[in-house]
Amino acid sequence: MPRRAPAIERSIAVLNLLASRPGDRFSLSEIARDTKLNKATLHAILWALSDAGYLVRDPEAKTFGLGPALVALGSAARQSQPAVDAAVPELNALSEDLGLDCVASAAIGDEIVILARTGAPRPFEITVLPGQRLPLLPPIGAVFVAWRAPKEIETWLKRLGPIGKEAADRFARAMDAVRDRGYSVGLEGDAQLLLRALRREDDNGPTVEEGIKGLRKEDYALIQVDPKATYRLSHIGAPVFGPEGTVALGLFLIGFQGPVDGKTVERHAERLLTASERVTKAIHGRPPSA
Image (cartoon, rainbow, N blue to C red; front, side):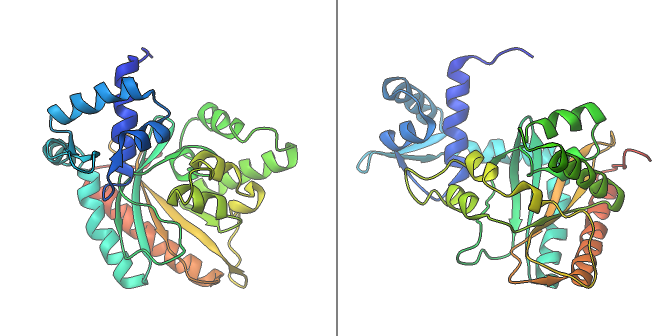
């Protein structure tokens, strides 16, 4: 894979930062801090992007935000990504029917990109918004990886690091369970580091990657749903397959309030699977075995 030019890498970093927080405006110093770019280099990038309309600059506050030229790009991108348009009505229906927030996201390279969200974020919950990116780093992202080739799954699992054979075997079984039942279940665990990272509560707080690594991995991925048990859930996720039989999108139920019994987990999962199957059909997709 060809290496991208440094200027392109830096421009992408700037746009990704602003896209992750579209309602905010950033000064040059704040962008430099968050992207870890040199101010002199960043100055040239910001002015070039502003001249092209991809950013707007407030001359009085000396801050930058997303510009109008991105609207046209976004509209064109949506037309080339029918899965998102097909997914949003299903997500709206899920949010209304189940009283939960829903997210559609895609795995792009080594990242998960949030593409759509429905429902109203509540105080103190993990906030994920369109444009945000998360590393495709275990234990996050099983829905995107479970239907890949065994070598790819093995490579992804190796990113867990030195967790011991027992924990590694458990995670391999968890991936098999996702594939067998068709959906993933993530337990809440210790999500405070991830919460702080996503909210950017303080300058010295953890990065998103540090937040993911801070999750208790052995407690995150649920292998078997016990109808008689209760769980504190992070998410329930199901894949949308594209025409080539690969995972085009992941649809997720999030925003669970308090413990959820196993029967409800299974009912919610079946409702989510129905929605994901409808989106798969709408984009002429197929599961890998079909």
